[in-house]
Image (cartoon, rainbow, N blue to C red; front, side):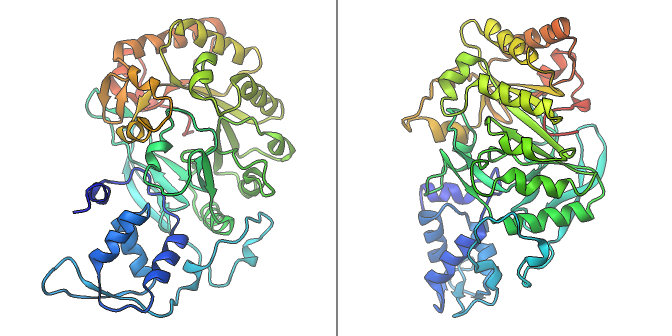
Length: 435
């Protein structure tokens, strides 16, 4: 019916990442007051002219009070009657300028406390527990559960965690970034670039979570954005979010970054409820495929400053790439890290690419030379040859144990087969995003 748009309609969204206010206003202003508009006409506009899907349109129609009338000729193509005025002014209100000085009591009186949704989850250790699934529609806080529990040897291991979706995008434009696939249908410029969500809404959701949820959780603020990308602004995210977490002792916020912008973090005290994770790579790898990010040396220096200031710092060496002389370069990276500090934890990962990421990169004028390393399939996209991945992990793990007596290690998005081959128990995983 719509060619590319039809594929988008039926394609499941990997990250339910929708900023509804702008979208709702666009739909309402275009169709307000119109009667007997066919649903498919509106859907065609949404799929062809925006970056949203049918499920998003359906939510908007409900939110702004559109009435549906049965179409006797086409059962699944009802007529839509749009109102002249929208009663839900909060949903269409323009996002205010970010202002982390605003208190919850200063929020608009129309802002209702968000609903905390719970769900029973089967966990990677075989247990089953009732946990928070999302707050309200999941646009700010939502459990990442897109990776099924591993059954086959080729299934990846990834424990489910809570995302804190305060923004999306990234300024660093790394060649293999999975956000290129996530935002490949976005008409506006997202990568390299980013969009910050309404701080008032973020505050409302986070404070309700921190106040009402007893089960300790880590909220990952870097799954779909670099956590420190907004630090040079007048309203840095760190100074907005950390004080909220410091008012309680159960939950922590996780910053995941390739940035070296730590000046604001060094000014914040206390910071007991904060974990900062730096993504690092071998210097030649970063120089070729992470050109927009601060150098590895600068990232290590930033991490050292935070360690000295008392922050808990984790390291992600991900994605490892088997370039020529990879052993030397990755061992050099380990030595450079431990010459400056000892991280709380190191998580290793190898190059991988979801098909959406590959499609969002290939033939787009970007360096896609990394794709040639991906020769195997898993339930989380293409991967490097399994025997080579095993050797890469083994070299680093053994070196860390023998040279630095360091064993706080885990793997990221790695298959059940590799965990078993390395003699590691994936059911006891303690990787970057969890306790």
